[in-house]
Length: 477
Image 1 (spheres, one colour):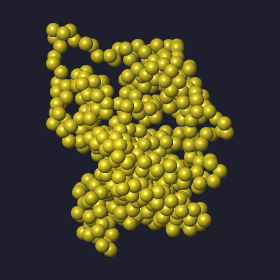
Image 2 (spheres, helix red, strand yellow; image 1 turned 180 degrees about the vertical axis):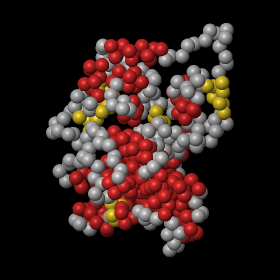
Image 3 (cartoon, one colour; image 1 turned 60 degrees about the vertical axis):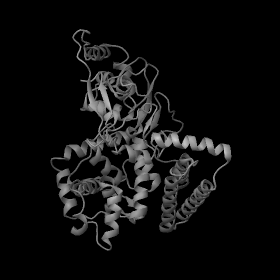
Image 4 (cartoon, one colour; image 1 turned 90 degrees about the vertical axis):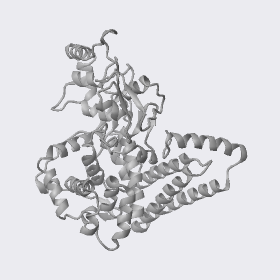
């Protein structure tokens, strides 16, 4: 599914593009493309300013150019014959160009641990340097000066350090396994890692398949419509909101938009992430010289958002200063590699035969391979992303031997018993509500997965469902 578009818009644009090819590109589309070229040039000029030491001017030029690109993409979406992918591709190319230029020698986050290391089985796919918590900037400002340690933030910090402490530690551990996929997206855009961690910890605890009651999904919890605006959606039977790298990239695009329209105000931007950009922008305009935390401003937010913003900022602060609060984040080797399966196996089965540390490898395998349902057998020859310590354990315990047999037997025993036709009960049904997704429905009703549920209801990719539609819960618990 193309970025920024829902299925209906895609069909309209395909029709419009076909007509455009027949009679030439409309003038209004050419104007948008000219704006794209101008924003592209402005971004590169800002990058040169940044490299020349003009930090403030360079970052401002780059932010404005990015905002112009996003504005052009929105107008392109509403313009017959305009190719939105052209704008998104330009934005991705600029981010990559900026990362390459600022890295200088080409080495950066996600580079192989050793020169010449392969991306295949046994070679390091990606590794990251230790978390750099000493310096965290937001648009040229030290994040310690941006986050206000007021009463709401201190109260949230107290909760993170007490009854929510296990969630914070779990979020850290999960994040470290995905850091090589997520952090480069923020680093390339000049956004602080602490913000990424704060959002991740509050939204999903670092579980890529988290789904909210409202239908938000993925590690960064995008709603379907918002995700579609920033390039997320169903592609080849997979909801890319669950992809940690793509979700991080979409959140970068979202925050760049918010900072551009909210004057780089971090608290308002975080409030928009939870409470809606329209409300945040209206409050910001009405606030005038008042701070986000002014009771007349803060008090107009929904209760959920009034809690959400302090939680995110408190988690970000603890990410930067754990030692000040007696907080010990465990050491996690976040290096990953690619491993080829020698025999069919599910993520459940692999988690059993691998054994491992306290929590095993289930969450890491699930987060690094979000396309696969955990109980479904994955074909032999499939390459999976895995922690670097996994391949030797796989060879020792999952290819053959007692643990491999035990895992296979346990998985066979977990298969549901099919009732005889005479006693089989009719499949239950479910009426789709606003914000529902197939993945969320599948999880809530213990189904065999969104693809199986779609096929049972005669849906074809990209498996679009609509409010009020009734689905048969075939193969569900």
